[in-house]
Amino acid sequence: MILPPVRSIACPSWRWILALALSFALPACDQFSLPAAKAKVEEQAAEAQKSGDYPRAVRLYESLLDGTAATAKIHYSLALLYDDKLKDPISALHHFRRYMRMSGDEASKKEVARFIQRIELEIAAGNADSGIMTKREAARLKNENLKLQEQITRLQADLADARRKSSAKDGTKTARDPKGFSTNPATAAAEKSVGRETRTYTVQKGDTLASIARRFYKNAQRYKDIADANQNQLNGTVDLKVGQTLIIPQ
Image (cartoon, rainbow, N blue to C red; front, side):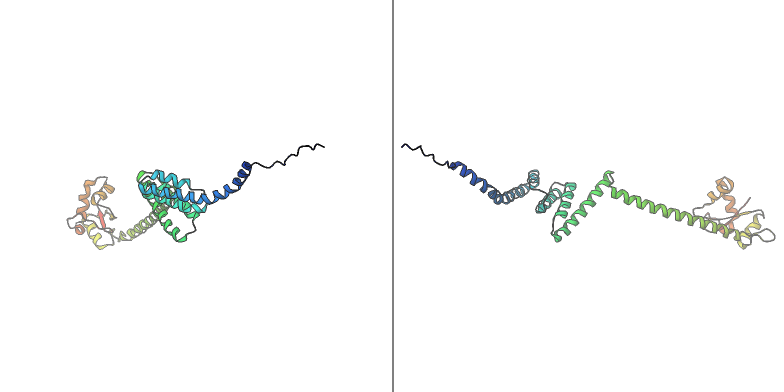
């Protein structure tokens, strides 16, 4: 009896076995090589920075950023690079702020906070010199302007009140006796020397004989008339004192 040929059970090729083994081995290999690769890139970035190739150092550092807290120190390195070497305060400020959000090193964050404050002041000063104003600076100036306006309003009210009181006080000074002369002895003596129908004026801050003459006569040259009428007070000078009562002849 002739038996049919025996078929051998197909066995997988050795190539497939090797591929299957590699498929399990490679992920584990990547896991072990990835940190080493990142460390190598970070080392290359530091070397580029040390040699003065700052653009390459920036590219290498930025290639390591992945948004995780583990890269906080990379943001710190970039911030120092932009601040110290590239003189780019905007970029330095960005990376310092990213470090503040991602880092857990409280002691280092205090130092970085001082860096941020310094850079913000430098940017504000630069904007002021160039005519560019930040929103914060504009808000500060607006608040100061409002305070100044309030102060001006109060001062104007105080000045108006002082003028009212001064006018009332002048009224008592220029009170007349039954003969029509001032009750102030010095003023009365001068009035009697120039005539009864005479006005008086209390000197205010900033007044001069010329400005008073312009006020009453519309002619500054008539200051001599006022000086002559008040010879007893001025003694031949044009020096006035605030609060002094002058005779204003007709």
